[in-house]
Amino acid sequence: MADEESRPDEEQEEEPPRTPFDNPFFLPVMLWVFTVWFGWDAWIVPMEEHLEFNRYGFFVVLALALWYTRKGLREHREDKQREASSNGASPLS
Image (cartoon, rainbow, N blue to C red; front, top):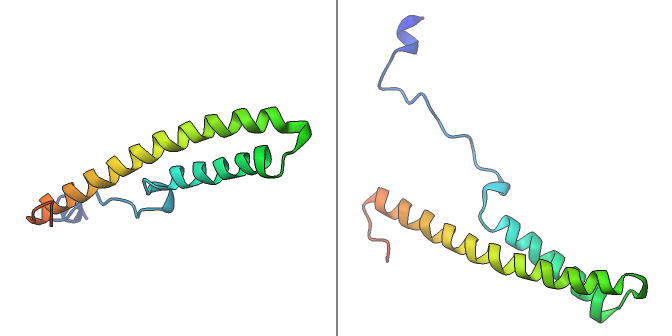
């Protein structure tokens, strides 16, 4: 039993499987959906009792969607470059 625990050639720390929440585009997509929702309720089919909330919410969520989309794109590019460099290929191909 002690031999099994002390083998250096076995990889002790395996990464857990990735989930959809690990995707760098998960949050941006959700924010874009909310942006469309707020925009729909603010201008396309205005809900009179929540009009001001929807209009302010639209711009707040739009700003967040733009910010996290930019951040997600950067993270995706870094992941691709890191993967390409670990495989020995050039990052541009």
